[in-house]
Image (tube, rainbow, N blue to C red; front, side, top):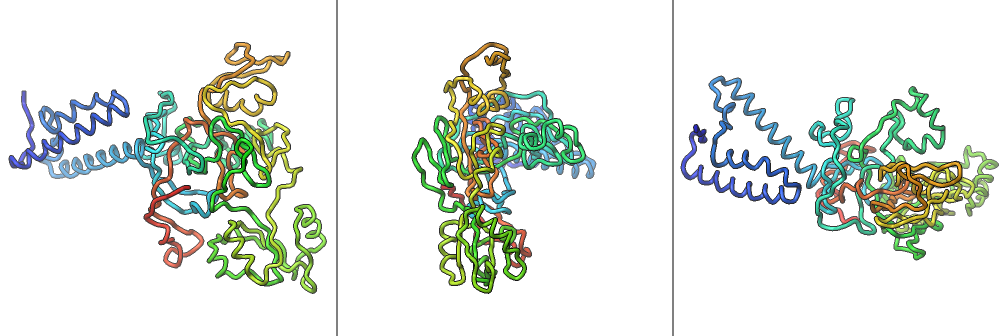
Length: 481
């Protein structure tokens, strides 16, 4: 049988090739034992490439036509890079950009980071046929095939999700998407406008599509509630099983800030690292309507009072951490500072949608976070809270008979046992975060990994060479806690 040795290689070079091949094959076998034995089907090809040479692997590189040699070399290099980067992105690390301000001060808009998939164990791809290096769209079209699809399976990782971990996950409510209006999510749109209106008005909402778990948009939040716990929020303080927990150091809330008429200096806002888009001037004594403002102050329970000859001075709305709040209060022109409170009558916008709980963004729960193996009784309240878990995430049918009994997969049931663990995620920028308070739990099969390394940070509010690059944030490890 003809063999195809690598031409032009010395004995020493061929020995080094075999040593390198032995190392690569050993690593490949370890990878196959971890990721799935089916990978071993590729082992004969690796053995042939480094040792037996029954296939002429260098055919294109050794072709007599120089154009074929050039294109063949380029093709080999591109295929090698795409395959290796795809494997790295799938099983080890993946690039991710911060799109929103929900973790502001911890992670900023314009931060580019690598997500460590080994932290909790990488998922085996559920939609294996897809364009390499594309998530859910490519060139304006879907980048993957819905079939074949694989069941959820997670490889062994370095640990489990813990409280206060920063976690990257697929957006749970992103299973159904209105393409023209992806934010707020589809279920919030249906609650606000009605399902029929959302499906009928293509001009406003666009096409309605379904996305499998691993092709849903990526979010990053902080894990606050773990499986099997009760979570509640009272006046912006989180309680787990009735006990207050320590807030993240960089947790922000929105505040109303009143000055004596002195504008907040840009230098101070820059020192506090407050984005221009987050600073709103709500009232100026030179043109503000004090009658309307007085009613707003009463409604929001603010402590602000008129200033002689200056109306109410200037009133700003901006996010602050406790440290930033203390720094701002030290300025002599600050007259009052009040945290923004969601009025109690502003209900119906939080999860579970449609259930009249009286909960708000700032006062929420208590709500039980499902744990694998836990059993609940099926009642109107529990069905409202957990029907998405049963139907959308665990794939069971659930319907209520006219007599009030429930059918799960067509069979009468009085209880339901959860098949997965769930988590409750919040943003550090609490008043500007679309998180579990609005769309519910994150199932374990949606977990992607943990932010690990920040390699680039761009401030799009500044010119690139004049503050647009945040040099001090770059090339550093991310310590989420």
